[in-house]
Each structure stands twice: as C-alpha cells, then as structure tokens.
Image 1: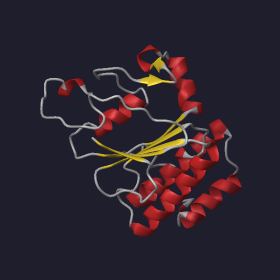
Image 2: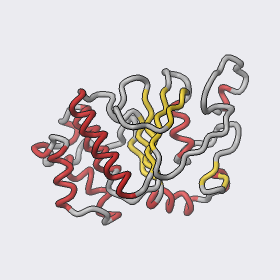
Image 3: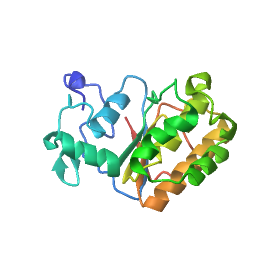
Image 4: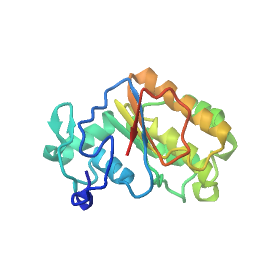
Length: 205
C-alpha cells in the first residue's frame, strides 16, 4: 500500500493489506473512489514509483530488484499501459502518435491500425493534430497505441472516462479481442464509468 496510508486504520480494501495475484488470460476490474490510491497502484505495477509498503512480484521476482534493462524489456514485451492522463503528443497527428510506438515495435501493419481507426470512428481524424481532438477521441488513439505491442498484461487506467456508451462498447470489444489473441490479461481501473466486459474478478480499492 502507499506509504502515505501506512498509519491509517480506516482503510478497507481488496488490494491493500491483501495478497493479490493477476494472471495472464484473465480480465480484472479495480473500482476505486478518488483518493484511495488507484493512480499510485498503477504507477507501482509498471515500476514508475516504489513508495509502497509490502512486496510486488512479476513472475516470482520482486520488482524492487529489477534494473533499468529489466524494466525496459518488460515494457516492450510484457506490460502495456493506457495511462489515465494519456501521455500523448498533442503536436503530432493521431496517426503519428500511434506510429511513435509501432515504428519501434513493428508489431502491427498499417492496414491493421487503419482498421482500428475505422472501428473506433476516428478514421477521419488520423491526420489531425491530437491537440485539436476531443479528449474522448484522444482516448481512442491512446488505446490503439497501447495495442501496438506484444503484452502479457494490459493496464488500462480509466480508459473510457470521456466516452459515451457506444464508443465505450467499441473500445471494450477491441481491447478484449486483442488481449484474447495474445492470451493476455487486462486490468481496468475505474472510479465509476467503465466498460461492460465479462470481468472475472472485481476488486474494491
């Protein structure tokens, strides 16, 4: 749990102070109220922060012991993230934002990516600067980018917070299809509005 919570006695959580295991091929939802450490948890899982109490392991190895090279390999081949704040490049086009990753990974063909743009209703926005698009459109671009790599685990931090029901459904279907194709797990976080997917386990943070 976050070190800032260590002296609190009022925390009732399915994750903090618990032994939790995420396995490939499964679908998980983490529901959390604001201020309960959701963003902190996401940062811990991908190695961006280590200010937590307890132990976190990947394939049996304590992640505190991983070096920069280990984390680089994990993020290239095992862990993909769709960040809550997206971390996109507003000065680049929607297509260029996706290709920033795909040209490094060479994982998807241009045809596959174009089909995803079409499926998510943003094919006409591919040559628009991302900073000119709505936040919901940017979320769809961020998901496509997250799928342009091999992964064992996809972490999607509030991926549909600015989307309506139809676009939420399309995002969920695309995410689930690619995860199943790779035999990967999906971990979705939400503070309320989330994709209606067949989650096998829901945690209350």
